[in-house]
Image (tube, rainbow, N blue to C red; front, side, top):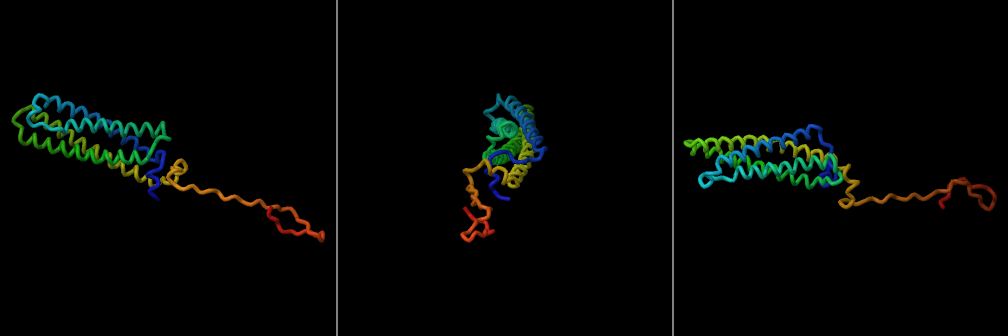
Length: 200
């Protein structure tokens, strides 16, 4: 096991169920996008008071997740020669960090709205929707961490398969050339043959 598998080219051998986790991330991101857009529409007229960028950040992050997880799945299946593991690793780690900050921000803002602005029905609806986005975002965050862990494990186990197409990242070993040996019987001046093989 070495870190060469993380910089190799080509997709690693992942379990089949990882494809379903990527699908779950994309579907939950669609749901979060819809809820965040609804929260902005409910709160849009009152954006001067109690405004927050949490729903907008969730919309951005949903689109980012579609690009990262949908794009890597498409490249992994149909364009494997363009699959760079280090790029996928950076995108996955960034997704973990962004989803953690997004659901924590949404949870903080939703609890604030529900605690201090519960006298007005649109604010209650806004706080409830943002809190629902936070809960779904936490689920997406956990699935993304599972996906990242299994991706790194597969890359570390598969460090030998990607090396053949990755010559610029390692030293190549030149094959040694064998010296041909003549196995015929050599005749010396006395007329008697010597049985030893002779190198040419």
